[in-house]
Image (cartoon, rainbow, N blue to C red; front, side):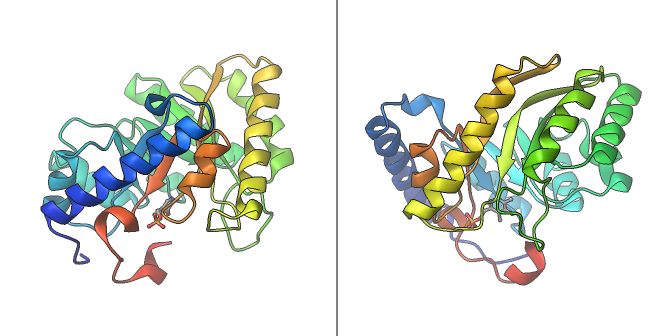
Length: 242
Ligand SMILES: *Cc1c(COP(=O)(O)O)cnc(C)c1O
């Protein structure tokens, strides 16, 4: 597990982030309470996660099934919701459904159907986001933008999933105009999807923006920003965790 900042430093970080988030929301004419802070706790220990859960973060983001299980089963989130935001293989769906309040990274029909099937088995309805690869980068996960429509159509016919919106990791990692353009594209897709009134969907969640881009994302309508480094500090094996 990577070293992280101590509780006092994390508290300062979260306070500073919340201030910047509120200012970005206000200057975009939005209500600060409409943007949630997701603490991305990949590679962090249960103890660190528990300390951060006592801070004003709204939810947690987990990339790896094993870490989600470990943190969740240890009660480290202190009853706050955890979202799954990493690449999910269908053989790991069983452990994620039920633990993750929202699976943000559904990016194929096969995964969508596997999640629905497992949710049915567990007798629940799993909330999901569709992860889009808006930049079309081959190295990233996420469905191509045009795949959104078959995914929405399929989800409309499934009884154990409910679509809450979209997630993406766009190609630009900063608050530049280029970044904003990608975020705007995602928001437009979300609005289009809402306008088509699919069954079994309410497109009210837009999860976008990370440590170096969350201000641009809020300006373009993010309702969840996913922040890791700015809260916990650098990760010690970043190449393995993306
Ligand atoms: C790691 C990760 C983040 C957070 O990245 P930081 O730059 O550390 O804030 C957000 N979203 C996803 C999907 C990630 O994998």
